[in-house]
Amino acid sequence: MDLLLTRSLLAVARDGTISKAATRLGVSQSALSRRLQQLSTQLGTEVLRPSGRGVVLTEAGRLMVSEGTVLVERFERLKAEIVAQLKLETGTVRIGGGATAVSYLLPEAMARFRKRHPSVRFHLEEAGSREVEAAVLDDRVELGVVTLPVHAKELEVMPLTRDRIVLVAAAEHPLAKQKRVVPKDLAGQALIGFEGGSAIRRLIDEALRAADVAVNVVMEVRSIAAILRLVDSTASLAFVSDMSAQGRPVIEVRGLCIERELGLVTRRGRPVSRAASAFAAELATSAAKKSARR
Image (cartoon, rainbow, N blue to C red):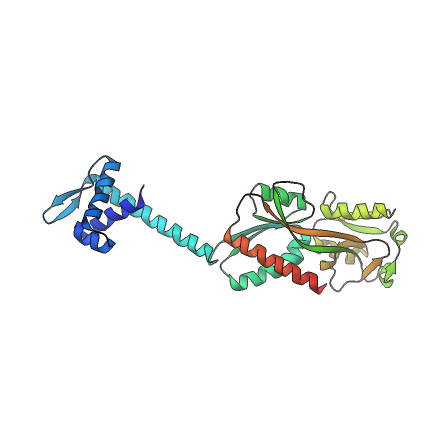
């Protein structure tokens, strides 16, 4: 349905004459009459008929006004919503990330972003890197924070920060009293590990194998908060992101350097929403500041 022609008919129906409607719309009477005739041609029937000094709606015209009013109002609401999204007065950021990103990288950026744009909502999913990649490809989320490199060529990647993986211990653990150990000191030690198959777990396992160290993984957990609580309650060890080790004894393992790079991924060729694009810029700034502080 042509909204210009519909608005023209609505104006005439409201004012009762073509001359008054033309003045309200800021067009000539002849231009408005052509629009009305074009509308009648499209519908295959007249929408107006002369009546005294003005015009009245035909049956088709009344139906057109009834339905057209709803469509015009709906279009205006849609336009207002789009304008609000462009101004970041509304919108939703759909983002996924792993345990480290969700717990320690995203919250600070989200808090700063919402101070400036309090009406923007967040839909946050926590999952492993490969699961987050799949969610971005399937359009369940627009943005994903994952461990690099990514596997799918359909993803655009923006590196965010390097993340050092460190060894933490319960305060009463014998190794906690030592600021520095060697890899063989870890042999047979009880370790709380990330769930098998996750990107960070593979990275840790590969580093331990390269150092010829066999640890005893007694539990596998996805949540970093749960891992840290279990480290304390079971007097165990765990390898976690340096970002999450705040205030805990960190044990340096000589010759063992475990690092990963975190990146922000989007679906190649699929534009993201205004809110998501703005938050991606905020997240890049926040990650750079975190890196500078460490």
